[in-house]
Amino acid sequence: MSLPVYTHSACLGHDTGPGHPESSQRLAAVIQALHEHLPGLDWREAPRATRGQLLRVHDEHLLEAVLEHAPAARTQLDPDTVLSPSSGEAALRAAGAGVAAVDAVMHGDAERAFCAVRPPGHHATGGQAMGFCLFNNAAVAAAHALDKHGLSRVAVVDFDVHHGNGTQAIFEAEPRVLYLSSHQQGLFPHSGSRRERGLGNIMNLPLPPGTGSRMFQEAWVERLLPELEAFRPQLVLISAGFDAHWRDPLAQMQLDAADFAWLTGELCAIAGQHAAGRTVSLLEGGYDLQALRECSVAHVRALLPA
Ligand SMILES: [Zn+2]
Image (cartoon, rainbow, N blue to C red; front, side):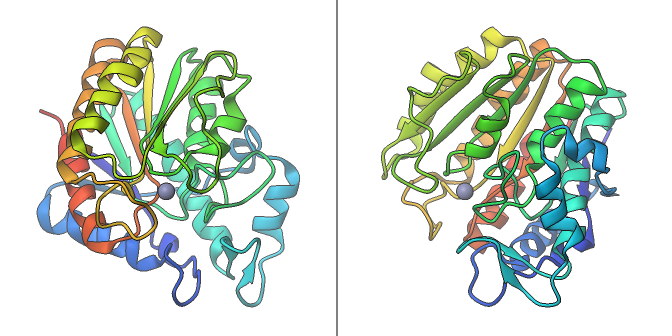
């Protein structure tokens, strides 16, 4: 069984403008690197998320802002977050990828799947696009697993270097979801302290700038992986950002591709014990193209069926 990879050319059409770190070149680099280094992946076209799927986590106002008022030219939703004429379609496909990937692993069509999509999602809250994110792709996928597939324990594991404030906000009162995040402290969006625990279903691990492989792996082994294990997830979703790589221009962590491969392996092992292997990973951040190529290949290689 090969690994399904969901993507859509529309995700390249979300135009953030010259000089913006969250560029279409990022996704193009990921797709090209996966084709080059991992031939035989099961490439699939991401469907559009439906209104009903989005409304499980987002409110009408956000849907309207992203989908119904397509601008004639690029407009800023905030200083970081851009809406271009084609952004609505990209956002629908990015969220739809996660939903389709959840359906695939829940139906036993595949054990694991990867979503090569943009815009990223983990900063988008129920009502607000922010931090380069329009819809919260991982949250839409998690809510689909709860509502459509009747799961009662879904884990969202977020190793992007930024805290996934949107995912946390959406699920902090939802005991069926466990949200785990490691991130660099002091960065955007300045949330994600250890004190933020939700119902006990939120676990944040802020790490100091300069954190390297050893400290990162120890932190996961000591603090976050035991939480995941104890939760006995029926599905593991991964918010896979690669901006904790040492080359990344937006952060100061010192990880390399092998760290992402290691963590992916650990997550797959826990999913193997409790979730019949079911793991869905969604691309979030990562702003150095070379690092993004190496990390996405290492991550997807670690997701491949044995
Ligand atoms: Zn990030």
